[in-house]
Amino acid sequence: MSHSIVLGAAGFIGRAVVAQLLERGESVVAAVRPGGEERLTAWLRVGAVDQTGLTVVPCDVTAKDLGLPGDLETTDLRDVYNCAARFAFGLGKDDAYAVNVTGALHVLDWAAALPALRRVVHITGYRITVEDSSEQHYDRGAYGASKFESDPMLRRHAAERGIPLTIANPSSVLGPGQYVGLAGIVDDLWHGRLAAIPGGRETFVPIVDLDYFATFLISLPGQDDTAGRSFTVLDPRTPVLPDLIRMLAGHLGVRAPRFSVPVSVIEKLPRSLTGADPESLPFIADDRYDTTAADDVARAAGITMPHAETVLRTWADHLVSSRFGAVEADPTAGFVDGTWVSGDREHPDYVLLPGLPVDSASWTEVRAALSAPSLVADLPGLGRSAPGEIDDVLPRLMSSVRSRPVLVGHSLGCDPVLRYAAAHPDRISGVVLVSPAFLQPRTGWLPRSPLAAVALRRMSAAALATRLGIPAGPAVDSAADNLRRPGVAARTTAALRQASAPERRNELADLLARVAVPVRIIAGTQDPLSVTVPHGLAVIEGTGHYPQLTHPARVAAEIARVGAHPIDATAR
Image 1 (cartoon, helix red, strand yellow):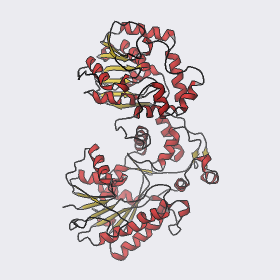
Image 2 (tube, helix red, strand yellow; image 1 turned 45 degrees about the horizontal axis):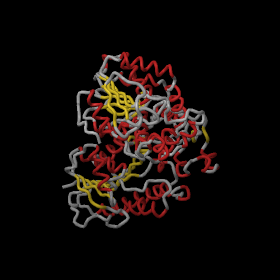
Image 3 (cartoon, rainbow, N blue to C red; image 1 turned 135 degrees about the vertical axis):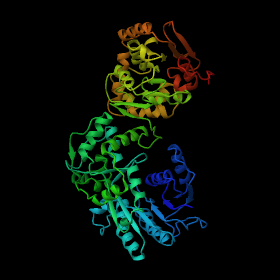
Image 4 (tube, rainbow, N blue to C red; image 1 turned 90 degrees about the vertical axis):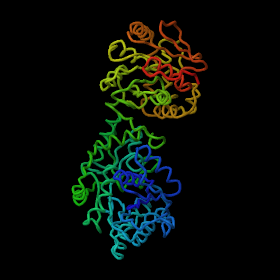
């Protein structure tokens, strides 16, 4: 029988609570809104969480019976975790009130009838501790106002009915899937839209790690003295907002704003000018918060809060990887000394570098077809990597590699591959050059005029795909998004001009002749080489400069011929 029920189990916090309960060997009832079952179970599968003890049921907290199945066995249910909430900016008052106030009261009434009830754990928010909850600021945002209104109502209702209620008041909870609140500031920072830091020098927007918070929640029912109390859960070591933004800017390899603008000024300016969501402004404050009680709970439970800067950097990697919620994130991706990397950083069989103007996402299907671990990176200053020397990328990547991989480069990415191969043949087992630009006619797909960068930055993903002659898809979407960031389009066109210089082409041709490891070259019939090469050459019919996007299985098979894991070379 299940001892715990998690309401809102498919949500950002709810699913983390479910996962931790299951990992402790407990049986759990996960109550979800329509469509939530697949989201929850898929998320648990990705995390390799054993779902043996999981029962998923439909739920609607706006209904008095919570919309739960009539045959749900509740005899042994003792712990109720209410993670159901409407958390978003721009909510209508009725929508927010129905879930965050009425729904929360329904949960208490339903739980009161459980014969084995030990605890109801409810989540509110840290600003409850400083705001006057008697004033309902619905004109400043329905989410915050509904939480302010519900908090005293829930505590009073629980006391009147003798319901063992514990309220957790977290600050911004950060983890995979969090795209609200502080994420907007990081989004603007990443895309060069953050002209100034909101608030002042002492503005404090605290955070707390998702896994830590979930562990904190499930520790509450086991501590008898937590019943009837509220706990403010946040990391007081969170840097003040100006330092937080500068730290993230350094991690992301972007420029941080030099100036701050007080919230009082932002409130008076048009939103079209500031880009600030009015609902986010009450959270940008100088207040500090007493976490003593929550710290005592954590010590009793033996849990330790991870360092705030580590949490912030990991979360920022997730935001960039997922393109701020637009796609599924790659859990292996992140920044390493300003370089965007993905994959096995210690024992890859293949290390792959992209060309122009695509990024490492262009290798996704090829990597899936290879039957071995791989490592990819965006070139410095291009894609998602911070500006730097392109030829430095492989020495940085290979510093953590303990295997002897095959190096694979596409177009401009062939340049650092050849330089590293010539200098360190003992560190690698082979080289594959895909559409090597230095061996092809100097025509190229991109104009070299000073206005080329402007045109490239304004190009939509569809237009970019047409221009490159490749299918639309995630790789092109990623490239187009990167090109819209400040400086990337300009650095792309500058790199193209540099790569087209006759002296550089000649230098690379000389390096190719001196490479002492096996070499294979891949080219398309629509993008042929301009010279004859004394190396293994694979020509793919019906493709141009990007065969890894048009014929990934064939490219993977040709790459694998140089490696230790040959795969089916049948062209598709």
